[in-house]
Each structure stands twice: as structure tokens, then as C-alpha cells.
Image 1: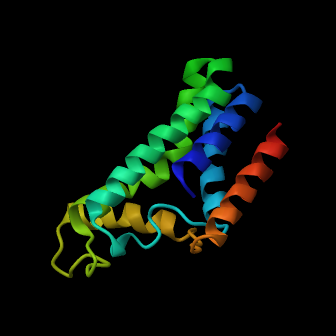
Image 2: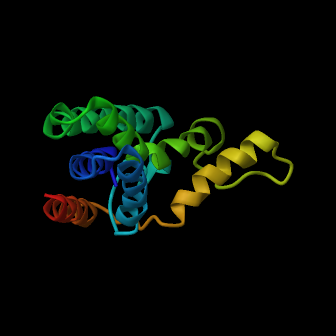
Length: 157
């Protein structure tokens, strides 16, 4: 899912659960549940474009998602509750970032046998969330994502 999807659902969770610990853990869990539904995001087919383009898309879209979540939910909640919950909701995707930036490439899908600790550590953080990922191409992957967000927003309202 895109960061926008995760940020919106996390904002809705924060608006429903006033305890930051509960809201944060639910947002983290929602990330993996949402990612298990076939979806498209900027990581889909990333090997077919320059890393820089994927990075710019991801950063821009994350900022957009955070701003949108704040607009709909954050301005009506204690800032800390909203911010921590949204951070937990998008965190798994950003923990994958070091692998993408420093080690992965179009031809490199896993660490080499002689890879150092940091590379293996970055790969582990990349691999863990990807256990749950179910990717889909456009337009189906965008349609399922919109439906998933709509479903979560409906049940949390």
C-alpha cells in the first residue's frame, strides 16, 4: 500500500483509540493486514526505473499522505497521539529503505555470501515486511487499495 493509504488508516485509528500505545500497535498491525491485500505502490516494479525516481516518488507521496492524514484526523486530535500512530503505521515501509538505497539494484535481489553485517541487517528489515506483501499491477492494484482504505475508514468511523 502507499504511505497515503497507511497514513489515512492510521489517522482513523488514532481518532478512534485515545491511548497512544493501543493506537500505535493497531496502526502497526493494520500495516501488515493492508499489505496482505493485493495492491500497487511505488515499490511495485521499482527495478524498472531509476532508484532516484522511486525515492522522489516515495518521499513526495509520503509527505502527501501525512498532510492528508493530518487534514482529516490530526488537527482534531492531540498531536502526539496522531503523530505517533501515523509513524507506527508507515514505519515498516521506511525500515526497508536502507536496503533499497544502499544495497539493492536491478540485478541484486539478496546479499552476497560475503556481505557484511549492515547489509544483512538491512536485508532482514526489507524481507520481514515483504512476507506479507501481495502486489498487483495497475489499475487493479490501485482499485483494491482504494477499496481497502474505504473499508477501514468505514469500520473505524
